[in-house]
Length: 195
Image 1 (tube, rainbow, N blue to C red):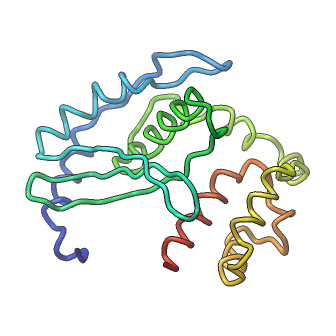
Image 2: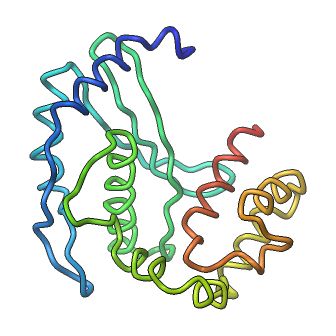
């Protein structure tokens, strides 16, 4: 559907965003506090249902890997989708489950413009971003990350050029490690658009 044809879902989404209240951090782990899925859903679901919306998630696979597809759906049939790649050790179901939960939080945060008090989706990431620019520039992608990027972009020179332009880099090696999640999401979305 074109944007003009999605007026109902956009109006409902606007109403949901107006109705949402801040979500508090209620869990602690890995040396930081975060809003659990329970806390997020307890605020989000009533507002969504009030305006005829729901969010559902599916795990899917394509030539670029495994990803979480999140769909915001209106009772009249209009939808908005977002996709996030999942990073986990193959065969490790606990790690896959954690990656799915993490991606669900990111997707709902993005789709609904959530306000989570005193909350960065991942405080480890915010700590990295709060380092001085010099520190961030010296922290490069790991060898595993570089191998994955090269593998993903092996036959996609035009996508590589867009990625480098977006990050203001002359080579992938110049992209800071604290931008890895954004890098892989961008690659995934550009490859999906190219299909």
